Image (cartoon, rainbow, N blue to C red; front, top):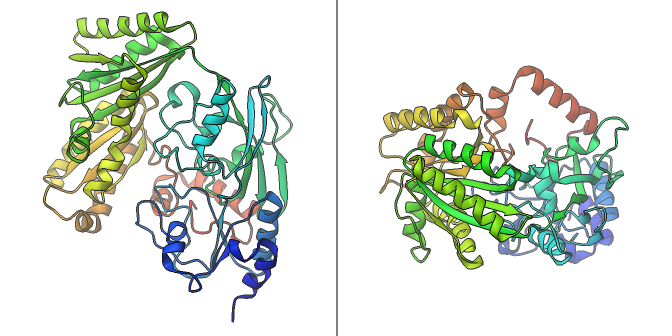
Length: 473
């Protein structure tokens, strides 16, 4: 005998889009029920795949009528367990992957309206084919979806110039916890008509409503892009280089990534075919400049910054990409770090944000404490220095079981890292979100007033707690 909700969903969506555990091989449901890091393995009452906003609304209404909670999911590339069901077998997993329509491109208004299941790369390609740019870019762009990007307020590699996902969105379409549809797909850049409902749903991780479509900002394609790698002897030197590049290049500086020696050592170990032009250095910086005045102007700016940095002793060496393929290879080096970590085994991840000026002090203090308390642990530190976001990850000592190290030391390592983050004026989550992984940590680290306000918003918009429960708050 099936659950009455499943019986009600089948005529609505069709049997092919209502996947029930037990009736199908586990391998067909694993992509929905297991998170990308394989830390969380849930079991849904069913996986449903609506194809329209109307169907999403109807699913939510049916789930509400049956008292069943709903877990929305995009590309399931999240890193905090926010998009998979728990193991109770009572939650409905709502996948938005079928909703992939590009609804409207308005070139004159520089906007693009797409459905939530559109893969980020598809959005980028659609803009590019129109001679325009959608600048959100991250390593998972070939599989993550725009709905998930907005639900977690994704960052990526160009936040320095263009901002997070929140800054790139003008309007939303959302299915509420009541199963109603809010059409806020405005392409307006100015609209002061009350509370900004859009910003409530962006970054809420599906706990307040389900994003089904979005109107996104586009930009003119830059006429030239320049990419370079620079070697620095210290993290303080990378901060100095950032200041020099910003002073000389201004808004043209679109990327500024740092990678420590350990992060690139893992890439060399697992992906030896990837060239590392500067060899092993304490810190390697990847810089990108996007310019609308042409390649010669971009190259003049870039070479001016690097020459001055060499002369002042801020950098030890540099390599400038001479072709698109060389530029892509440099970015591939940076984007391969998470993959290399995955190959090395489970690790204790920290997605943190700090004032750029305080990053060197934070890293020095935290590195020292971790070396003292967890001898031999490998610190894989890389990320978006330009906007103050580090992926400060702790790998087990060489030869020590990664799974055992994680199980035994995760809480203690987190305490050290997050204590130092707070002491240096930072945040425990920069771009990955809270999900399940950091929910209890958030309760300890966020101010009581902020937590109370967040809970009041959740109560107002989802009083029965049926949307992605036990996530965030």
